[in-house]
Length: 304
Image (tube, rainbow, N blue to C red; front, side):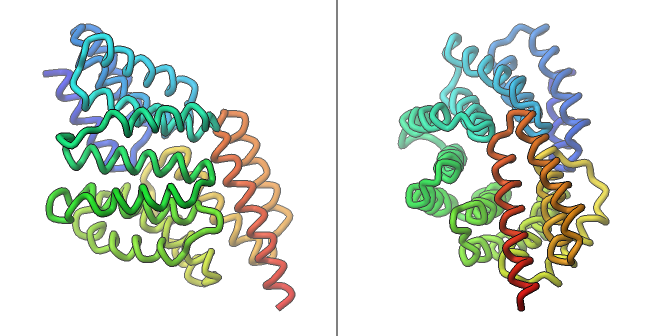
């Protein structure tokens, strides 16, 4: 009963966007699973803990925890679902830390693990994960193909929450591609927004605001981007490291456009170096890319 209570509490903190509280509960959850010594609970607790560690920027501990979960699932012959969940978690961690060869190898294994009988929900998440790796590798064609497959798998009335989350993730991935695909990002964001307003939790509503701000900046709608940024300032929910960095990037990009170049550039250089030092290679690269784009855009605005 204690394990179940901690599991549910961690879910509550997750949907509320309270990353630090969620991580503390997940650590206790993992200890309880070890005390119970049940392989399925030990593996599932570790998958959730690894995801929490990843959100908090603890990539090395997250990789170790997810690897333990996969080893448990394989050693004890746990259901395919547990292996897939552990693999997806490892792939996401490898992609963020720049271990793209490992991420791609695991993504191939993940897709090979799937079968026609697998639930649509799990298939969608697997395709989404594989698409993320292709985006990180710059393989735009494969990423788009995987995203389109994922988007077409699940009707909105079958799992509305996953349907919404997938479209938010797709909008984010389209904005990470090179070049950024603002048209597709806008399409997927517009699809997700009504669902986010209706069933979304604070975590998803904040994601919508971040994506709206990013999209407005990329489309040159700087007044709109400032308005969305101001709304983000008003939100008090605790966020994970990656979300906080995304918000900081947006604010500093807008500061550069507004002419406060020196301070904003220093801030973004500091953020990029901190991400690099924490082994988050992918996030560091995104900060440098955002800085270069902001400087280029500011030059164009100044010339105009």
